[in-house]
Amino acid sequence: MGYLSEDKRKVTTQRLREMKQRGERISMLTSYDFTMAQIVDAAGIDVILVGDSASNVMAGNMTTLPITLDQMIYHGKSVVRAVNRALVVVDMPFGTYQISDAEAVTNAIKIMKVTHADALKLEGGAEILPSVKKIIDAGIPVMGHLGLTPQAINKFGTYAVRAKEEAEAEKLIADAHLLEEAGCFSIVLEKIPAALAERVANEVSIPIIGIGAGGGVDGQVLVVADMLGMTRGFTPRFLRRYADLNSVITDAVGRYVEDVKTGDFPNEKEQY
Figure 1 (tube, rainbow, N blue to C red):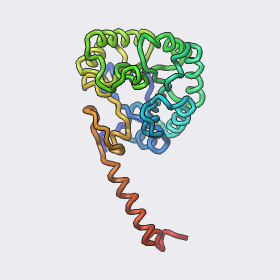
Figure 2: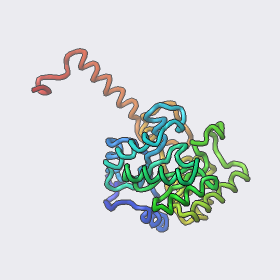
Figure 3: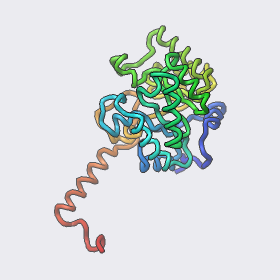
């Protein structure tokens, strides 16, 4: 498989900057457990996001809001144990950095100390800038997240494309510069017009990772369960399915059930 990276060095925030400088695209996927993270890391991914999308994918919630700090730490620890090469970024969940700067730093330090992750991701721009600065000042790398920010879904009221209007687009650009100036090492742009995302990527020096933000950015991220076709009924324009594991797993489980029911499993070679 020639597309797999031969470079086994640990990916760092500095290496991501170097990738942007030389025009090498950055690959990023979510993972929430040891087994999947081990596979994703071995396949050559650059960045693994322990996303608060675990609230949807792992727990079945409708939004990312219910997941707790301790649950994110559990998923983060599970992923970090599996990873050798990729940069591991953990989402700070809703409510852990919006109340006060001091609480944001306390929660950020807890995540880093317990999970041993490489960095954290926070949603928002100017509104959370003081917390971002304090966390970075504490020595913790921060990835920003602008555009469609799922933790603010109740404010938006929709998962539609963001920043289509000039005022919101200009605010997004300004927020991207503020996050860069604050010391963020990268920014995720979610579900915004491709031309706007490309403009941001050209204006800032830090890597811009897109999801539903077109091809003019420095890298791409998808939810691993969606990309592998494990989920059904979620078909946004930006999603490309690279497998149909839903069908594969359903068939495998069905055949196992049949073999157990008929007594075919286990056979003589499969017992002691």
